[in-house]
Image 1 (tube, one colour):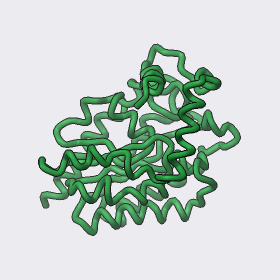
Image 2 (tube, helix red, strand yellow):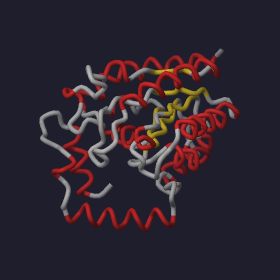
Image 3 (tube, one colour):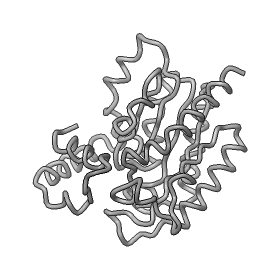
Image 4 (spheres, helix red, strand yellow):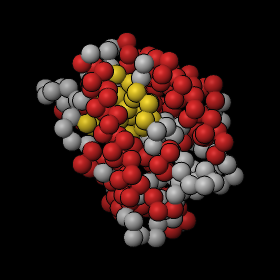
Amino acid sequence: MTTFMAGVVHDLLDPASNFTHQSIMGAPELATLQEGEKYRQKNDWAYVCKYKAANAALSDGPAPRAVFMGDSITEFWTVGDADLFTDGVIGRGISGQTSTQMVARFWQDVVALHPTAVHIMAGTNDLAENTGFVRDEDYKANIRAMAAMAQSQDIVVILASIPPAKSFGWRADIQPVERIASLNEWLKDYAEEIGAVYVDYYANLVGDEGEMKGDYTHDGVHPQRLGYAAMHDDAVVAIQKAVDKAGN
């Protein structure tokens, strides 16, 4: 992570900061990063190389208890609640990713590590159209694909709700409240159908209008430290449920 991005993440996570997406627009460092991202998208669209060295370093040690697969909410979680990512719990989130990109790297970043469980949180960037419009059925197919890959290798699946958001700072024209609620209902039902663990972070984070509560976020999408703290206990319970399932 660059020094610039480390500073952005610090401010985004700090409950006392005044972070907004607008506050970093126009920064020359952001423009440089965006140009680099365009180049990487052409050469490694799913960013399968991001965790290559970290994955290799795990090969000689014990298998993880749980791998957290996701986007920036998962990637920043490892900083915003570092205590969660101990004792064999590791993060494999990549900022900006959609569920389609996660499918493309799921084998390398999850299955090949032979974890007891995988925690899948995806959907925010699908709804924000980061890689183009994604139909609900396409999103569901991607969740099914990841769950099937995991279960075929006896990895217990944890399906996480899509966190609440009323809009996206980088796509203010999209109002995702109804789709988030609908897809979360599907995730809950699908988890029951396949014998996965469902973890509902949405209920603790959502405000009266489908937004993420203001005390938990600066930009309405990414939790800050207080938001991650509100998610912590549910995550711990979900991991333990998955470990217990694996032992039965």
